[in-house]
Image (cartoon, rainbow, N blue to C red; front, side, top):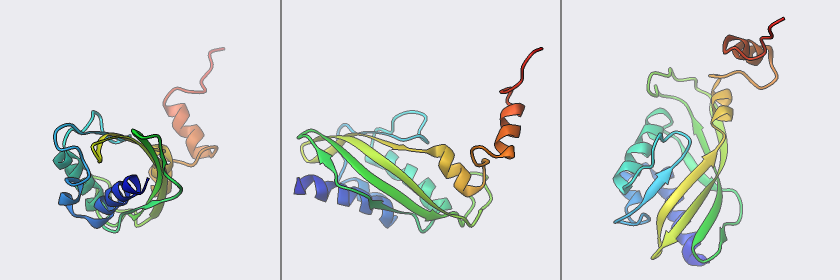
Length: 158
């Protein structure tokens, strides 16, 4: 298990260290697939994952990833609970800095091959992150109800 812990400690350091080269030693050099709620299709190289991380670092220069619980490993697959802590201090793809601090809990589910990450999918609540940034209204509020009405939900024909 310590090999898997070392691998995922290095994965978290790559995200936290703002070093694009940090992904190369942890990813399968020939065949890696990465997905999260912000990737429209799988990323298929350590370089592509690094470019994705650079987007995060551009808007959240203090972003860091931390382990939040024990990692579960069955010999091939790993479930690694983690959280992202970051402050939105820079423009991010047209989104003006909110200067809000956010904590996004997630879990990485990965397949490990030859001591490296082969396939990895990170799950987190994108809506909650948007609420924390003030981009979307909190659930149950009048703002959420208004947004749903604009989208056509809650309208009844009589």
